[in-house]
Amino acid sequence: MNIYDIVVVGAGAAGAALAARLSEYPDINVLLIEAGQENPYDIGRSQGAFFLTWGTDKNWAYETISQPFLNGRIIQHPRGRAVGGSTTLNVGAWLRGRPEDYDAWEAAGAKGWNGKTAVDAFLQIEASDRGPSDTRGHDGIVVMNDLTTPTDLSEKILDAYVNAGLGKRGDSNGSDPFVAERFQTLFVDGVRRTIADDFLDESVRARANLTILTGAHVTRVVFEGNKAVGVEIRDVDGVRTIGARREVVLSAGAFNTPQILMLSGVGPREHIEELGLDVIVDLPGVGQNLQDHLYAHVYTLGTADAKGSVAPDLGDAAVQRWLETHNGPASYFPENGVAWASLDGHAVPDFEFLLSYNTTSSSFPQFPDADKRSGVTIGVVLLQPRSRGSVRLASADPFAKPLIDPSYLSEQADVETLVSGLRIAHRMVASSVLASWAETIYPSPDASDEELAAHIRADVGTVFHPVGTARMGSADDANAVVDSELRVRGVEGLRVADASVMPTVIRGHTMAPSVFIGYRAAEIIRRDKAAS
Image 1 (cartoon, rainbow, N blue to C red):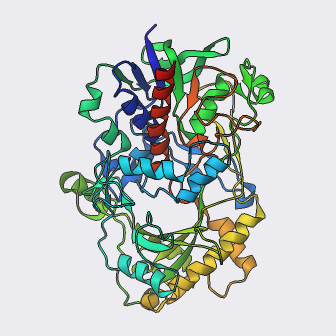
Image 2: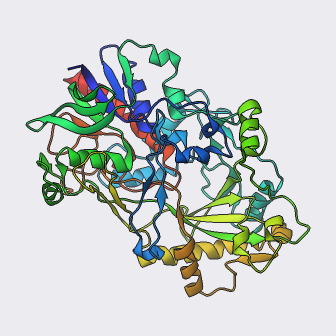
Image 3: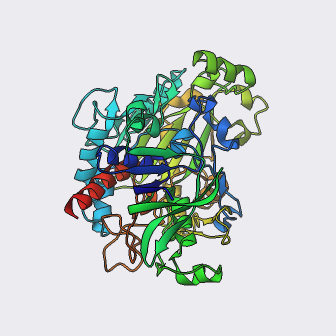
């Protein structure tokens, strides 16, 4: 049996950062395990056509169970199954949230996880092309650029935010939370660099104390008594066990991490026993507290002579052109602007607006030429949802997909808040700046609250930010899964370091805080090793 000091499960945003940082110390022998393969140089590296890879084995291709508050709809949840995790197939947006979001983690019992700690880490992690400042790092590891755009309409949408009196142009990381900007992403000069590309470059991979094992599906954590001593995997060599002298760290994400925990006997006793599995420790919080960002949309259609929307072309010719030249229709992602807004009197945002220079012509069936007209789309993201869901095992089969039930919009307050958000978006599209691109608006600004609520339930989709299913908390919190040192309660030698430990979802996108969690986890583990 191969034995390593530390076994990290999952080479996504958190796991790649964690393994790379741990391997900086020659006295720690690290194994990083990934179920998928290395991320190829394919169309998934493009800004505009990356989602064409969602139908490949690079995607876990998860989906929710039927959602009763979304008219029974099933919501697709693509998750990355490759070195780089979901940073191989996401939008790549580096929107790290507000310091207050991390202060809320500490208030929830995650001691030491606060706004100052997060900002300090981000300034070390980031390599922004915007230059060094008090709010963005310049000499770090993760390289990022602003998204490019082929149309001035992108700028007009940002101007409409200002014109509507909602805020000013600025930096989302700045002291003023109410700004509009073109956000930064992992696409460097138009080509995706994943978090693994940044943290696990050739020099890091050359370290003698770091091993990366791909194509290995972790089926469970192996325990001796209540101590984790390794993991069981299945790969081309069959089923085998890999040992961990010091500890196992799960960085498999908000769906896979609770699945592995429960398959290993760590989780709600009744649920584990009903599937015929042995219980190592009864932890009712495993798989609970699932949170995610949803967004509903306001669509506009311009006058017949309005220009600016850029119709997507993802045919074979466009794909081949991008692969050869990195330009053409597959080069651009239309949702390339972001802005922030709140309900009256709130000091931090309640809504993120994702701004697209394209519209959805199917929303305007009364216009036969709708598909030839320009328009914009405002995606209204509910940043602090109250609805909570769960992840459960479908069976004891480690290859069966988990049962994912976010319980979207199960809290009526979420619907009511989104209605208010659509009203604010209506103010934006009614701005004189967008007059030519908003001759018609759907749903109409004249719609009643009830009509907007019906639109929301039929229209909302996920922003792909699941978190919270193995959350941090204090010792007296019966539903906390890990402590502030990321140690799983009730067992030894097992930690979790990924988005599942977030007590609450941030007011931003979850890639950046996932990197922060992996980055800081390495410091915590190293400190514990030095003290032992």
